[in-house]
Structures are given as structure tokens and as C-alpha cells.
Length: 209
Image 1 (cartoon, rainbow, N blue to C red):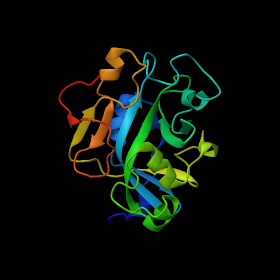
Image 2: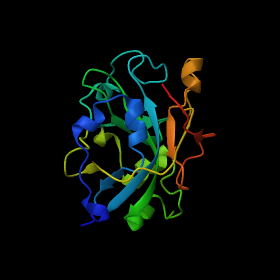
Image 3: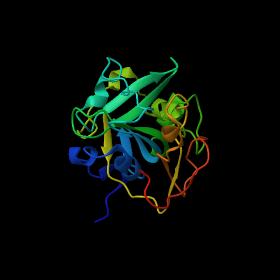
Image 4: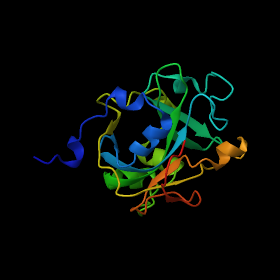
């Protein structure tokens, strides 16, 4: 019997205990759920271990980035420019600081709740952008460290992978080394409109490491 939108299985911890680059691609099509709101992930960015000069963990462990060090399968939520909350999914074995920024999603259920949180907005891009996505889910810093693989609160469920995956450079990391600025570690579903305006993306060809 085909499962409904709300009946997909929770993603286990083992899924997250891998390279952030792999998890970032495989999170496309997966489903974030909080109460009545269900979102399908459409865009991600990988922040890798151990040598990623764009990562928040590049200078070691701090109170801000502590959640990045594990365990995997939890939220790393931070405040960007004092305005927007950003949702990241912690990856890698515990002790290795890596995460995937969830940049965009499309709404599958709970649009009325999303609209109330987004000041009446209801278009296809209502959760297209990391700040918009966190707002659509009603997230703040209290969600930092929350387990996504357990029932209750914010959950990550299996979904369906996109038919096409696009890749391109990450956004807003001009401080990083050139090879990391240019690395195609941002991924997006190729067949949906709910993707941020983060720059050019193209079809994946070959190894992205």
C-alpha cells in the first residue's frame, strides 16, 4: 500500500553519518515535518570535514558551532546577520564537524500555517531560501541540537529523489579559499520552482569532490 505524505519513515542516524557532500545530494526530495507543516527539500549546501575553509568549524569548536561536532542527525541552527535563522543537518561521525545547509523547500502540507509565519505569503517560493525555510517551519535557536531522527518536534522523513540534480558553487562564502568558493557543493532539484536565487546551477557530470 502506498504511504501518504505524513506516513513516510523517519530517516535513521546511519544516513547522516557520512560525508556531507553525499548527504547533501541525497537530502533532495526528503521531507521535513513539524506539526501540520510538511516540506520537500529542494536545495542544499554541503559544509565538509576536515578541510573546508567555508565551514563554521574551520577554526575549531566554539559555543556557536558546537552542534556541528555531533552526534549526526541533529539540527545545527544559527542566526545569520542577526536576522535570519538557518537550518543545517549535522553529518559525519561524532567529533567530525560537518553539516548540510537546507536552503530551500516546497510546501506539501500546512500552507495555511506557513503563510501565517511568512506574513501571508503563499507562492511557490514561500520557502525558497534558507531564512524563508526556517521561518516557514517556525524555527529559532532553541532548535539547535534537536534530533531529526526521533518522533516529535522537527522530523526528517524519507521522500522521493528528484529526476534531475543540479549543482553549483555555494552562496555567500567569499571569505573562503578560491577552490572552496568555486566547488560545486550546492545542489538543487532540477524539476521544481522552489529554489533560491543563489546563482547558476548545471547538471551534475562526474565527480564533485
